[in-house]
Amino acid sequence: MQKIKKVALLTSGGDAPGMNAAIRAVVLAAHHYKIEIIGFKHGYNGLINQDFFILDHKQVHGLINQGGTLLKSARCKEFHHQDGLKQAANTLIKEKIDALIVIGGDGSFNGLLKLQQHWSGQVIGIPGTIDNDIDGTDHTIGFTTAVNTAIEAIDKIRDTADAFERVFIVELMGRHSGQITFNVGVACAAEQVLSFENFFVNTEKDRSARLNEIAEHIKKAQTTTQSSYIIVIAENLWRGGAHQLAIDLKQYTQTDCTACILGYIQRGGSPVAEDRILATKMGVAAIKALNDNKTGLMIAEQNNTITTVSLSTAIQHQKQVSQNLIDAQKNILAMSAQSSV
Ligand code: ADP
Ligand code: F6P
Ligand code: MG
Image (cartoon, rainbow, N blue to C red):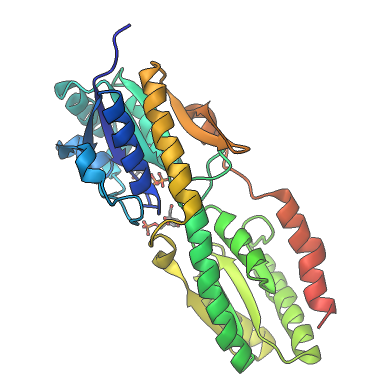
């Protein structure tokens, strides 16, 4: 059986803490198997623009603790069109690449599957996104760090909110996924967690109904205790975002609400231990899978065991927020916040 010699590696979509740790693991594992790694820059743009360099094991020294990505990341519009996909495939053929590893999210894996229509090399995905929205893996690389970063920030907001007995609305990342919002909201004991899974605003009528419900909850809290009140809300859930929600709520509560968008700090920073370790296990597994002639797979971790799932299965459905967490928030935590005050 012909063994692979040359593997392309790129990072694509929203960068995530731990992508560098995954790059390091891929490069070191490849070095072990005497495979050459070619790093393509700026996501799929690097394939289209032939922007690449040889990634030597010496270059990954001191990388494991760094946020961002050595290979840079980007979105790539051309990849949505046949011409872009063909150009990328031509680069891989011209450079005699045997396999491609993509570290990215669901969008990046969609792109990888499309590329397979034009290129017959082996492909492997490593799930790297703070959104944790990929089915088939318990966690994506970067999620745990992003959650911890947001928790740390909101704990600080709680201090000033307590001091002023203020209502805060904190907007969290994930424009299609409530994983960060739900997990962070529960971990920060937010008085309200507003996310795609538990908060529906499809019509104007829904908007007023939801405003009434939140206003009632705030008012009850205010009449029985002098305390802070934190609402966490997912990006893209409320038209106009956290700032607009603060304005809208003021009309219903006559209380000033302070909006705070946590934003890109959630994507940066040194990865926490869990992400460094997950990224390392996944990077090594990706090279092992290629060395075993496997293709079309995403490396995953389920119940603390590294495994693989087909890329097409991984992107079929968005990973859902734990129903236990949703139920606990809805039936127990939110209610006790209301009745204990
Ligand atoms: P993520 O990988 O983090 O989910 P995106 O959804 O932005 O991030 O996807 C990253 C890139 O993957 C896009 O900019 C594009 O180049 C490529 N991509 C996403 N969806 C598709 C698709 N349906 N077809 C081809 N390429 C895609
Ligand atoms: O997919 C990662 C992510 O950070 C999402 O949480 C967020 O909605 C989006 O990317 C922001 O993307 P951009 O960098 O294009 O503003
Ligand atoms: Mg995505």
